[in-house]
Image (spheres, rainbow, N blue to C red):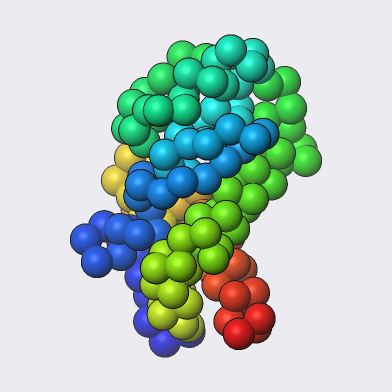
Length: 147
């Protein structure tokens, strides 16, 4: 990899989970990956439905207040499975312009750089697991392979 994209803002904002796009979780449509992801962690179905028409920012805020599923943070990393499912839908034929933009990053290393200390999904101050970037690169590789 020759290039590093370490900011999911401005021309690379399409990589952010806050980018408006239609995705679904459990048969329900949401307005962004962030909204669907926050809905997916809810223990109660009624809470899940509260995220349907919220923006990504509103969803992130509400997501801090809901009762989470018991398996959300367990060793099987259910949240990684959900995130991959949502990202695959975001960058599918359902959203062809987003799909092409991801493919166009070609061999760049994707790093969700941040200043809010998210070291699970991204990297802050040089430290982090970068799970979001890793999932995006995995999906990009699959898209390129499929042609």
